[in-house]
Length: 200
Length: 200
Image (cartoon, rainbow over all chains, first blue to last red; front, side, top):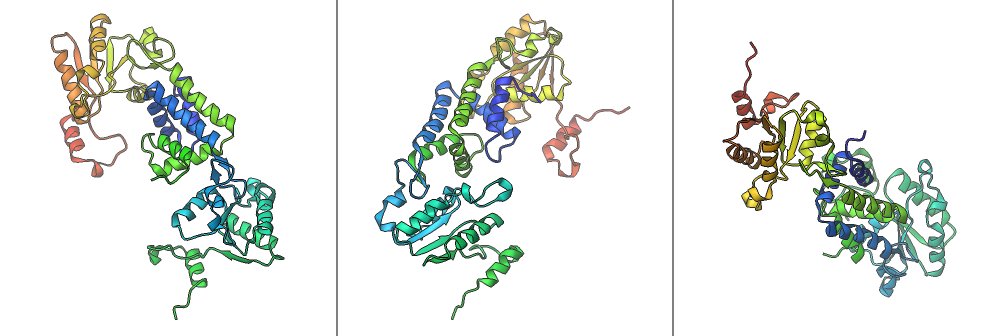
């Protein structure tokens, strides 16, 4: 279906690859970009390419960074023996926004998912093992998502670390703060009950 | 609020300029683009710049085109004396998708809106007048939006053309096909009643 002029059609196709963007939204973006002055569109593209060029992976934890080591790993105060294992940088950033975790991170780069062809070799598990051996880690907090893939990954890592003298923990599952119990799904309610805390 | 690394922050800012895109969506797009292989991101940017370079305005009607004249103006069969005046290319494309109009178009490039600083000089009215004088136009269909700005523009053009021997028409306002009368707004219902058609 070539609804637009070819160069516009190609723009729509490219913009349609953005996550959650359908054809109509892609066309809206394409028209907006077409209407920009030449230099602004050039700035737009230059910024994207420049970001890609300047942003690297931290050699320790795979967090985003500009140099070789990210700001978390570069901060000596954060080498407190705790390492928080996350699937991706977005989760790491969410943890940093929460601001209560004072240790280091390790970004796996995904979660085990045989259907999508993601096995242990696709995740940075070697890097994690190396850091556990060298960085005097005492606790590994598994902060993978509470999904099938995330749980599988947590289980896999737990087995991988079973011979090491380490505390291995998992983020608590339960009712989100501010939520209405009436609308909580069954799985979350069950998990919340399972993990109930004594108040006295 | 510099939540991200500077180059990423700049990417988020640029992507946040797309219509309807907030900070969260822009960040989602930025992460997606960062994860693309270098050559795919280069292709993405090249396509946008190439589109901007290749797509021009038709010298007659301001429709998008690759050469000097758009496909509608280049089609001799469409010079039937009817000219449909639209605010923008998106409306022109919607009309073309409907497929019933067989004449030519004229894209104004907006609608009169003193608040936004858009006066008659910002619209291509001169081009419209010139075409009406030279192209043996018999009917001008004012297909500006049924908004305050669109109606004002239609009224302005009607006055501008009052000394010419022309049929001037306006698209019918009424109930959209398939809609439920129960949920039609008062203005639309009033317009639909006003424009009611005799069945016998």
